[in-house]
Length: 63
Image (cartoon, rainbow, N blue to C red; front, side, top):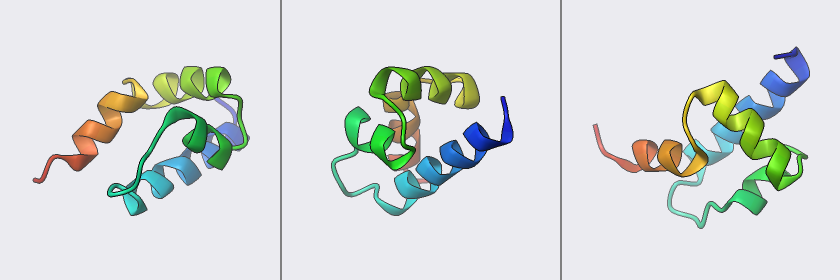
């Protein structure tokens, strides 16, 4: 994965971490990364190894 995608996906991950109490839907997060929903979900899954909803749920679970 090239550095542009890595930077954009890290931007989205930071947004998720800062906004866990907000409504985090696919369309909103795709727009944060400047992607279409389809392309974003494909890249996100490849980068994190899990779906967007699964990732958000793991982040919401207290340690």
